[in-house]
Image (cartoon, helix red, strand yellow):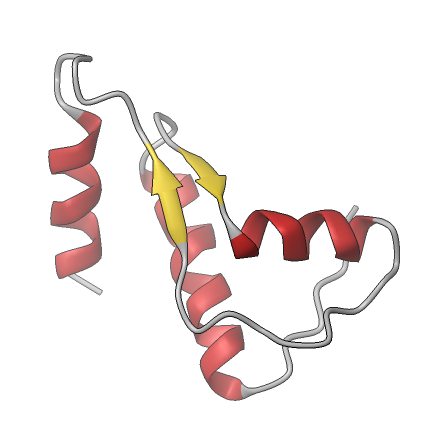
Length: 77
């Protein structure tokens, strides 16, 4: 189990949005600074600076289109 310790309420809220997204749609992967933060937490390291956003990667050629579904899910948040 990876233990995340967000530095602020905004950071905690963003992680919860990502967790909710993961429960609702399995056809994407976390990339960028949040993935690096996840690897750091797994190694029990802390990040010196937190990102203010999150990046996701999905295959837009897949049907039904996961990018459109991810957008719909995030618009409801």
